[in-house]
Length: 157
Image 1 (tube, rainbow, N blue to C red):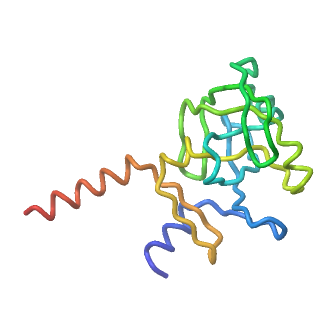
Image 2: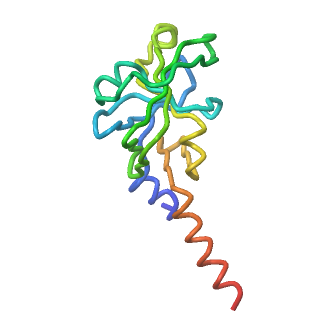
């Protein structure tokens, strides 16, 4: 087994793919609560959690109101900030999210989603997906940069 596959098996998060919908589904922890079923959505600009996840995670739902446009049309949202969002071995602090009903999406897909990982979270990671092993690895860019910096210094010698 290659070093990369060994790392994926050791540190990567197991994901699921629904037979009806080709979506990457993972378990995520919000403020230490969960796991909650999240979809990895590279087309979503913002990370979203459902009101049920907000309640279970004790997140204030009285934030600024807004309108979000998604696959199911325009929906009302509330802004919120998570204390923490844990994805496998990686954890982010103070994450901005939108609280939005996922009922229409859940009825259509029957996936029981608690959240959607969007660009504002995904952009902070190098993401490795191995479909054969069904593993996804979220490597924070700060770790990547330090490794790249060490390599660059070695090459200058």
